[in-house]
Image (cartoon, helix red, strand yellow):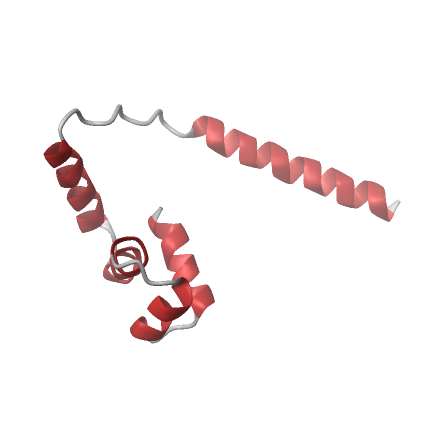
Length: 88
């Protein structure tokens, strides 16, 4: 009975995840010029809260690991990872 309950919970979680993915709007086609892409990235970053923007910059643009970036910011790695997840 326990196994069946766990299996049912997993099926429900997978179904919810599929539904969330299906509900996302279609992505815009990539711009034809690199400067357009840079502008789109800058605009997207500007919309993020400071903590999330800092996490993205350190990990994706500076190339720091999550552990090192977390130390730079002064938070633990899980907090930094949560900020990255929220930003993306």
